[in-house]
Amino acid sequence: MTLGLGPRPMHEHLERELKQVIVSALMLDDVTPDEIESDAALFGDGSGGGLGLDSIDALELAMAIERRFGVKIQPSDEEGPKIFGSVRTLAAHVAAHVPAASTVGQAAGQAEEG
Image (tube, rainbow, N blue to C red; front, side):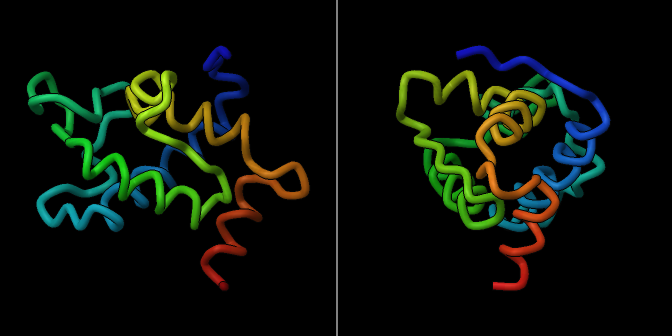
């Protein structure tokens, strides 16, 4: 599986939505979505501009993404570290796996309504 970046405008919108999901789902009171760099590492020690998330955060984030976009991600799977590498790789994965009957925006809207 490749995590190609595809069309940038859709991914930019999805990256913004994912940043909002990260901040709200993980209750990051000291970070705003605008402060999260799309290419920064999500996990690790937080150096180099990354968020420094841990495995518990990965599970919570995976559940929030499933609720919001209908995309299941198993952080413990072989591809997990690549998928959760950054907001950009996460957006590429979500865009590639969003349910066929909906677009990313529709999936997000349905999750907010329900």
